[in-house]
Image (cartoon, rainbow over all chains, first blue to last red; front, side):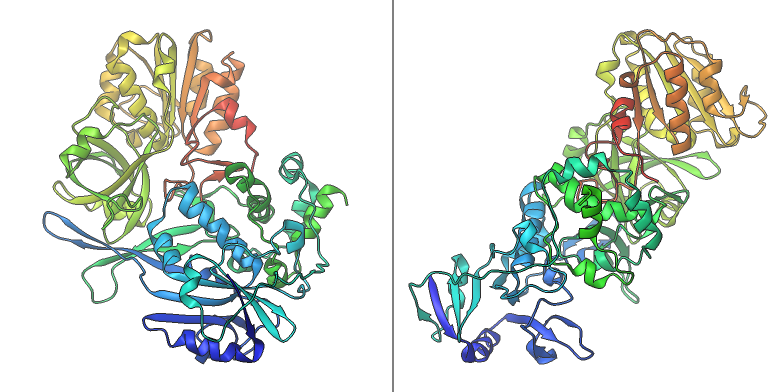
Length: 328
Length: 277
């Protein structure tokens, strides 16, 4: 089903969504200090000019999530599953980030079977996509085919003074009286990304060039700060921690995102670190996206949002690294 | 509550605690659910994720014979937060178990062959499980050799069994310790020296290895030199196998996730993986 909403009515529509009982609404915001991320409308100004610095992955693979609560009794253990049942509407997710969620869906719902914690969060979320009208300075989504929106419940496309809206499946719950039906086709938008990656045979190419000198050169530069992995909308490696909260008797097991750029990522007992060099950790980050997930899941897990480039404090750019390996 | 949740640990009871060395203990474990204990089957080299409630979860390989079904053993060295917490546990205490995970040593493929078991330090736990399996079905295998080394003789695991095996005609046992040790007949030096010093046939022989990373490379090279081919050498490449199900991303070597495609690999498979530094 397709609809039209005048741009001037977007605020009204978001207010409507915000009034839904038992549901929280999130949208891209400019927060105090200039950082852009998803939040509740009361926390900042609606920000629709470009994609946010922080990706919406926090709604699906949060930095920290509770898995179980254990109560150790004399002869048994009480185990409580801590499923997040909060209903959420997330407005304004860009096509690249929709593809990141598509990758996570494949990884955590199909490839390994259903991950209860992710699955429940995903089921309880409405995703409202928003197509981009122009590319950001570090975007390279057109190289990866992640510039066309997929995997949404509602999709907004800017079109003159209006939004053209596509509604799918459970997105019907969010149709408003402000919407007018239309039979017009999806407006065509051409994005012009300045950065590019040639993905032809990229797995074989990077296999062959596993010891290419560029890794060492960039490894010298890399600070191993892990900002790129934190910013990446598909990075979802985690570790499991457990502790007894102060003054409580039950212990909480959590899952926290972990970053392969940190030396402790591969550290085992006896202080042995398997990826000691910064260059091999940087290579792990980039090859995981462009090579390893192709082998395992048949897809590249980079979505071309360019956040890792924008966030890198020393200007490491994966499009340049892959370009150099290909020999331009 | 979803019982199929892959992260949900199953409660199990510690039925016995054996002190192996100053910093290592073996725990006998039995699932609380008798049905689960009955169904529990593993190949040596596989591991379980052990929950010490209140402290966290860690991967531990199984050290008892794969043919022992009423309980299984976990041999744990006191090296970190969770292992330390486990060392405080006593008979009757509860832990949580998930697994077994990963690929083990393919004991069936060792039939009618000579087997050289090479272990370094606490790497004796998983290959020790394999060795127990081999000895239990002794008639199916050719000559058996155990080459085992540790920092000092005090640190040897399974001391009673070692003594028994040393006297047995079923197996040739050679020991090594880095420090001079009393009471044990052993070579002063590394376990890998024993590969060159021990006479064993190269024909129709397979090797089972587990130990620290430095030991593995040397052991493979020395076995190769003796004429044992890469496809007949099996190594447990243990990494930080945190979740056990291939999701958490900690244990990959290139494209292979050790908790799923490993930890046991043939030297041939291992040499196809990239070398990371």
